[in-house]
Image (cartoon, one colour):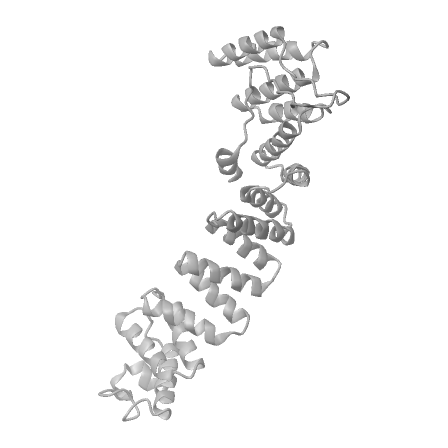
Length: 340
């Protein structure tokens, strides 16, 4: 199964069956002409059969429990309220025995009952959406989530994220952005933490639709909250894409100062950025120290870049004697003298 199993484990609204009768207190001083809604409750025969089915579940006799449930569903004499509760219980049983499609069928029958209470209907629709996600049927996940959103006030952030994930799995990257923004806004409104994964999803969606300013802004939030090297490197890359070279230099310099640039390509890029930023002395130092440490290859290409850096540093007056104090071009390896 996909990562949606984790979503289901953390957020699955498994509807449980309340076997006790439901009663509603009548409003006081109600005008005689206004009819009150009759309280609904399970009849004793239905209650007893469901209790027996629960006992079979407790003994792991799922088939026996389902036979008892199906017998109730074949009874035309049960009320729609009772049928909804029986179907709800059947969905729970099917899910517990890992028959996801069977659970979906039971819940679909439940929401099709016109008389079913609205809260129960909406909880069940959301559960169906989650079940479709575990089956990796993402178009159906989207369909049921949108049905749920249409009649649900103040949805929780995780519901928006689930919708964005489903859009991601169907390649609808542009559609991911609105629910992700809603998730972030709703979390802030509730004074809840915005999760790193949500920003990662937004970063991914923005990149897929080539909204690079959105990518940049999202990465800035990621490095502020979770300052990982991978986010800093990605931010540096997007600054390059947007021709914001000074910002790219600032990102690389911060990484270099913290000792996080460790590969030859990273260090050479750092040196090149120093040259482009008209700070050749620092570029020369990066190259020279990298070569001495063996991190940067001592080859003709890198020596040529080092020569350029020291020459520019000398022209800028960064060095008292044209080269770094105590160092002349002849002090470098034969490869350097050869390319001069």
